[in-house]
Length: 340
Image 1 (cartoon, rainbow, N blue to C red):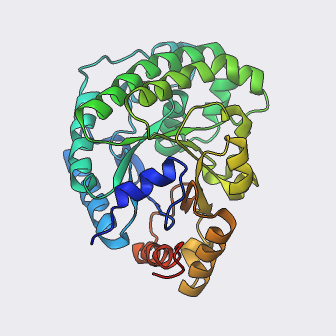
Image 2 (cartoon, rainbow, N blue to C red; image 1 turned 90 degrees about the vertical axis):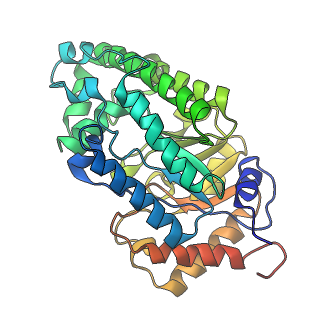
């Protein structure tokens, strides 16, 4: 009898004991400027679909996080110099029927239809001000301007975030009502500036983020919060302890907060992670024996209740997907019955 991976993952997300640990990893399939240009070049979207399909067939995962390849370019952010407070105030909501929303829904529907009957699917959504950061850092390759804008134009950044949030709420509602998507993978990150302490974050950034998550929770019981430590960006996880989600994923290695510590911080809910995602680490360069031993270690430490084995963030894009299949096979060997 075929294993029901959807039920397995729901059991883990619901914080019940599972007979084995489910696992999920992901990486990008489209790189560079093309990540932002799916509306202008439909071939990018076709290649993204093929990339997801090949990855699924090769790695045999227990869940699929669907990357927003091709749609990282939010038009009011892309068509903007993003140099001054006035530029930030030019960012305005697109509205319900803009192609950035309608085409994205159609694209996600195609992806979900490929995998949704086999595994649960989650779509990557960047929090509103992160949409601005992503454009500056991954399109412009400018790694200082986002913090410059946040420090010098905080109220304007807040206003921009509130406008972007309007469209993300529309997008999330449509994704969860017009496709069979199971939930969102919602990406947040501290502003990488000492100026943004908890009080300032709560005043300016939090209001731009929480309604997106609340909208997702209105239409799905299965959303994942990702506190992004990509490229060793550090976060105070406490900023998000009351962000209501079904599971929590953060950079264990960058933050120095273990899965067990994080599980306590987030009220004992389901946690996702375990592997460092950075190039040159175990998942990228370890032997099969080393990787399998680490899988066993993670399962011993975290048990079979409310745990999904994964990584801190997206794994290296050029990793051999067969290495992820090693992990898929390893988790199936470790179960509560003591055998495969």
